[in-house]
Length: 245
Ligand code: BTN
Image (tube, rainbow, N blue to C red; front, top):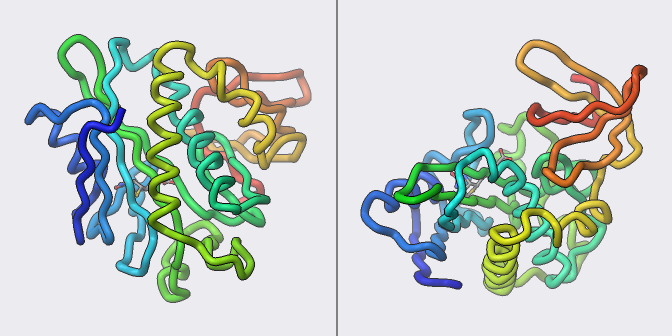
């Protein structure tokens, strides 16, 4: 369960901070939040723009007795945890884009970055989530993907950022326990319910090529299923886009 909660006005990155704390004996269930990040990390080495404007930047440390190859579905599980927290806050019509973008109106509301580190007897996993609660326009213009924030998505309902952070922690902790025992078993139905790409044409960007197909959900390991001309293929990595870039 929650072993320590750390709050900072600013960190370079909540993920980097917790990864570094693993060496100093940080415990499973440590959560860290920052009001701003000077070097927020996104997927594929990108920067996660993290101004001091009332967003959420949160990371959780969990320790698994398994090796990294058993943890590939972890970011899918984390995405489901974020959607459950948003539902508790009354934010509906949100969706997930494989592997773990949180979307509203096909625009990015949040993202998840899972980083792994070897730890005695297993693997340490830092699960980081960034949610745009209030993202001022000038910052949105720095972003590659079209973006939105909860101020827009909640459509006049007020957002309680502390409550949302609490629900994120609650659902992340429950999901880590369940993932540890049963993998994605308890997440698959919710993922299918919230899959924003299901039965839509998507573009999968890999190292050197782009594959287009109809998204058919995920399998039990959390891999992407794409209907192509030749049949259904399964993909372990890549970046999905709803628009040809
Ligand atoms: C993405 O590229 O979509 C993933 C973004 C993840 C951002 C969060 S903010 C809190 C945590 N700390 C980081 O440096 N990154 C993650």
